[in-house]
Length: 108
Image (cartoon, rainbow, N blue to C red; front, side):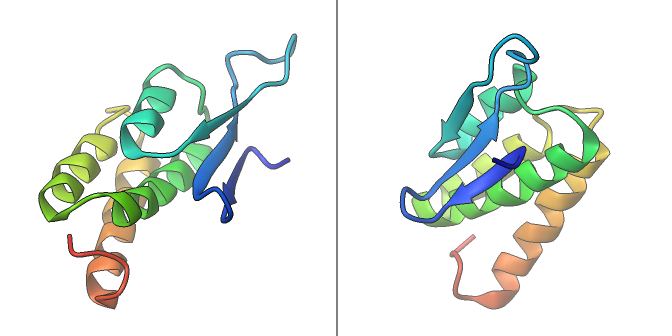
């Protein structure tokens, strides 16, 4: 298992709960943006690269399960889930722009 991994069958982001290491190894599944935001805020996701990847997958979650208004609000909240995480904000904004440009991924 990678630190973060997309499960295409379940359409969830799986991540290793960093708060449980090294005593326990627990996988958390985030099926929507609020669950991912909670995982980020509760430090289940740690490290700049992992936060960046989580942010990008968060936009994917938003594209697959939110209308235009929810997408905008969810992605904005995701970008600031950890205010000091520059990689998180950067990847959310970059992925959001790519989703808009594709015209296929979402309506946001």
